[in-house]
View 1 (cartoon, rainbow, N blue to C red):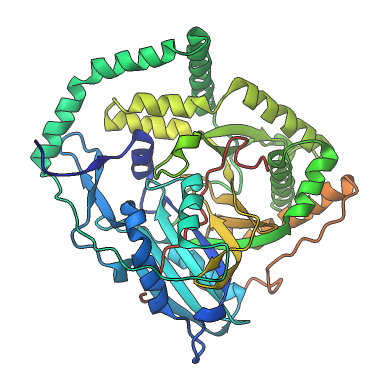
View 2: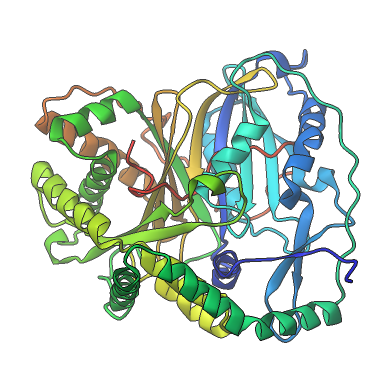
Length: 512
């Protein structure tokens, strides 16, 4: 009997490693801003050692955080093994802004940290505690590779690391005893044995389909979903100023809206929050394109909206259970009401057609296909799109980390090849927090797009006779950025807090 222990990555988890390139990092990330509270030190710093102790106390609940990748010879498929050289000081990092640090400096630092790839020889996460923020605040910048988790899993992880009350007690650290890892030969032997079970697994799959109330209809629905997904792949989206070859550097910006205002607009139009958000983005893209002297009426602008495929019994598991919708945004339509009507009609059709099953079906097939075919599947799954728009619903009560209150959390969705801007949202404690990730060269005027999102929401709300109170967290109308977001990001020391990754729940995660 084998004495070693490892876990094979699913085809979907591995697809995020396949898609990664030097200029296309595939980690999910985010910046959370806290009140210093009891973590403030007399010298104005933050009690980093308390963060480290708290993190060590929960790592046994998140075993993936102490695991690294190993690759099966010949097959070249990754597996998770325990990291015998795990060093928490490498992953928990500590840096500071020049006091008093403002939001602009924090955005620049976030962009630099988020632009850097994670080291595949180590567990694929980093967390930075940033002190020196004005108004007695500090920030936590988190990076977690997408192969580890999707957005829904990230929210579950955050619940482990935070609490609903300021009272806290750091538990005792559990000893870490790494399990033996297999040799390359043992991995290859196990992989060959797995291949021999393919006929049995196929029969089991057929039996599961046969248990469906209408197996024929289920098969046809999935085949149609795959066909529709592939049909997108052979029809290129329009070229726009927001798309092109990505460079190594990034810009990061954010915006906060009262969630009650967005829900009021949703109620006024009798649609989903999903429809409202996509309509806001469509209006912003339209305004942005016109400012770049592009005629939006001539543009076929497509977005990918991630959809969680997690069942109830999968809510506490790591890894990815996510698909996506691909849809056209009516950026050529100048009337916000008509834009919303068109988007609502399309999203209803997507629900009925169950388009999200296309990615899930392809990834299920990819479990038994060569890595090259997985690469092709990953490309088809991402689709020929112009932008990703994603949301993670969060708790509507205040959260605390060791008594420090979380004020806002701004997520980052990774950019796919050729997509110069990604939009991610996180709803928390009555706020809708928008995070904007952009290529440094393709979108030098990211702030212009953020303002366009704000004005698009106000336009849509005004058309519904809803008053709004959007707060733009931009300190100045001047773009003070001077350094590209790519080089070294600071020195070291903190704790993983992941409230950010990009996938949603059914309804693209936006159906609050």
